[in-house]
Image 1: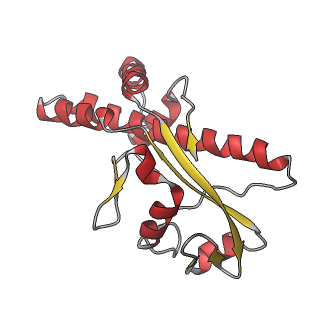
Image 2: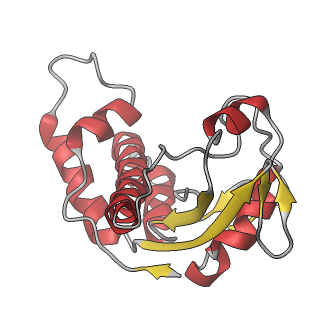
Length: 186
């Protein structure tokens, strides 16, 4: 299924954190605010998701696949269903980050990159909130989002999740190194 909701602002505190500036004092807040405003304009938020039954470490997708990794198995312990999701803020913001870098606008490039990360995380968080509200009506409770590469869950699981989440429907692709494109995707 496709998720079509927009973020209304990009979180400046998260942008600051992703830029590695959490403890920086006297850093120009206008620079961060400008990056957040630009990220909001350039973001093309899109999401996709599918709901699957889950039992005995297996996601009952077509084809089914077995989850491997102690951390993800522990995280999903007791779950009956899983939501496989993908979210992106698109290629345009990535292109602008690269253009700024190529022009030598390093600070603006780094801050826009951080704001793009904040934006995609916010988009994924909004999807989760939507799921929680929707599925709580059916008596389900949500666990927090868990991605390949977390804990001991191998990044190679990305390939299977990519296929069953609907990520291709929203313009995402997967590299041979299991990295998502556009880069600002979850």
